Image 1 (cartoon, rainbow, N blue to C red):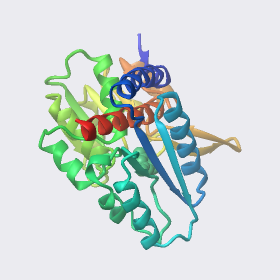
Image 2: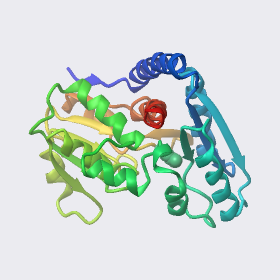
Image 3: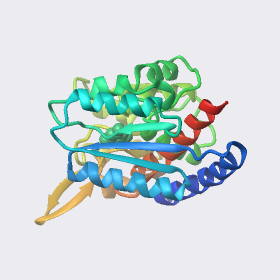
Amino acid sequence: MTIKIDGKALADEIVQGVAEKVAAFKEKHQITPGLAVVLVGNDPASSVYVRNKVKRSEQAGLNSIEHYLPADVSQAELDALVDTLNKDDSVHGILVQLPLPAHLSDQRVIEAIAPAKDVDGFHPVSAGRLVTGQPALVPCTPLGCMIMLNRQCADLSGKHAVVIGRSNIVGKPMSSLLLQANCTVTIVHSRTKNIEAICKEADILVAAVGKPLFVKPDWVKEGAIVIDVGINAVEVDGKRKLVGDVDYEAIFPHASAITPVPGGVGPMTIACLMQNTLTAAEFQLA
Ligand code: GUN
């Protein structure tokens, strides 16, 4: 019997747990952990993400601080806002929604955020801490994937994990986390030869390529755990629909457990952002 991994229910549980810890933190320090979210422009997908983050912050008992900047804001103005947030003691986590409009640099903003407040875990300092096995703020999506994997599998040690995709946001940090959990890790990408055969070897398959229905049923070993990070909007019979990087319906019978899209990795990402904000606040006040 295949298990459908319910990311929404698990995310609710995590946010509830964060809310309890936030209440204890407030009691101890007389401070409410604050998450600043910056949205530049009004891209519809980014606006939905930001709305969900604000809603979840409220459920977690965090102080949500929102900054909405016009699409034509200058790099200097954005840098100045990040600098102000870095220095503001009521802000414990800073998230600038990406991607930014083309005239602004994602990388420059990532590096401008104080590492202690880097709740996205995208700063080179955070990335370096993760790969060297030091306590780190870990990117939310891979962190959410690991929580789901740990729930499905008591011991990941020695399992062959194949990660499809090598982005800084998902593929690379995911590989580091799996390695830390003693998996044998293979990363496959657009230049990999024989990708199907490598995926077929995986006990754990994590798809983070951003290509709708990229992973086919004959790429999946019987009993594998399949984590689908993709969220792709496609048109089916003239209707807009969200699908993952994995052909869910076709692969379901072959997997031991699989995440749906939507309702899998997505809600976990936001729950982990709440967790990271609390972690950042605890570090800052320790
Ligand atoms: N855009 C899409 N996902 C993310 C994320 O996790 N963090 C930020 N900052 N921007 C995103």
